[in-house]
Amino acid sequence: MFAGNERRKPISYSDWMSQLPSELYNTPLWNLIIPGSHDSMSYDLDINSSVIEPDGLKKISKIYCARKILRKWAVTQEEAITNQLDAGVRYFDLRIARKPGDTDPTRLYFYHGLCTRTDVETVLKVINDWAENHPKEILILAFSHFKGFDKKIEGQLHNHLINFIKTLFGAKLFLRDETPTLKYCWQKSRNVIVSYDYPAIYSPKLWGKITYFYGNTMDPAKVESILQQILETKKPSNCFFVCGLNLTLQSDASILKYILCPCGTLPKVIQRSLPELLKWVQKQAGMNIVASDLVTRNDFVSVVIKLNISKISGMYKE
Image (cartoon, rainbow, N blue to C red):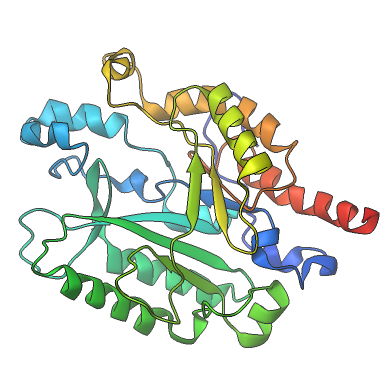
């Protein structure tokens, strides 16, 4: 799909779930292999935002050059959420924050280092519109982290967001006590699964935290090794889980060799590593959600989707 570092329009896999072989229609979704997006909204980071993380950089939030460098190493996606959906991504890593000093008491944003320009409710409306136009494609939205929630109004902010999610997606929400299969989702006309990582509030329409495994390193070989070990020894059963291919900057001195490189950016480092990571992915059969940076590059989506065909061969061998 892409040659070298060239960026082109993503190939569409907008309806790939509905086109899977019928042998997979009754398979629980946690036994399918689903392409996911790590820090899904990071393409929209606002250079004028205060620094949300890491905490050590908050004190230099007012320095434009510092925010510019942070943004270079915080952007993990290139394409807007609709383009990611059209490309076939079905899991979205959505990290929520309050923007410091916002005069709207309930307005929330996404973040990765910096806040996004676009607020949460606006983006969710876009996702809802897409879901309505693709009723056989099952979306998994994972809300987490919740930065900048003042303790005095924390409950109010969560209740506001949860009520908005329930109202917006309505009957499309898949209940947490049901086993989601393609066939069952289609029969019930439900195609949105919401994971909400805040145990203090329980709702039958919201799923709990989805475990996200990742390497916590910038070394792709170590990422592969760590994920391989997890798949062999700690793999969850009968629930969703994520294997994250994402590279992670450390908070120690090793970060300097990356951020002090004048032409360096996280996407450039990812682009060099992703082909090898995908070669490893092609050898795996026991994954569920596979999340990546730069999801529209290097045939990431098609590589992950095709692993489901391998599952059919395995079903007939058993």
